[in-house]
Length: 260
Image (cartoon, rainbow, N blue to C red; front, side):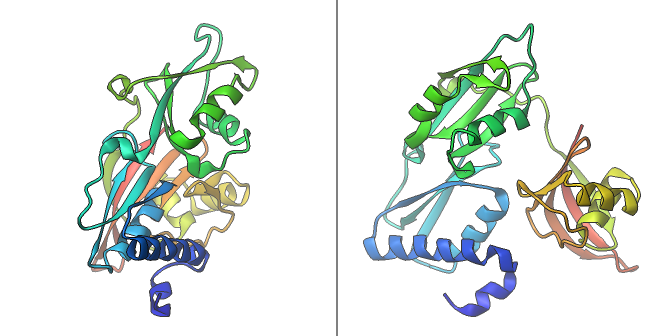
């Protein structure tokens, strides 16, 4: 890959760029499709950018349902047309004693990752407010089903369900337009949730903020297109569009916001 590609992305994203290039070369050399693990929106954006530079290859994303946040990507030669079942995604419903227990996204994800399986093997975890479902890579779904018998102190059972039984998530993103003085992490958080920069800085430094599912302790971290920011107790932000600047030099942002 040309080294100038790296300049468009963060230094910490370079290993992922190298992995993308390996996948692309594999498809080009073998002339056969390649299926990735689940990617977050920022990773999907990077991979799409790189595949589009290769005119004879195509790609398709699927995460189990139309609005999926985390998706697997199929990279394939132009002759190929992937079917939905080739994305190898299984859907499980989590059965638990609802009258006596409460589950959360964080507890479920922590339990799944506690089985020793990498985060990239899991897709979205969705809920309608009471029921919970999780999308899992087919290659590890049997193992996960056997290993997951408790979430915290709550006894659970994972039951495979058909895609026609997908829950309608209770919480949905709202689209908001805003302006910010910069794309610094603390600035965007304080702008969206109308709190002081000092408070947003304190939350970041006390490890209450994640960027793309990884804890970030740098208030000066610069956000970019399709980054997802999770703020404990407040909700989530996705940078969906960066639309230039105002006359006063502020950055116009299109945001997806999920408020708690």
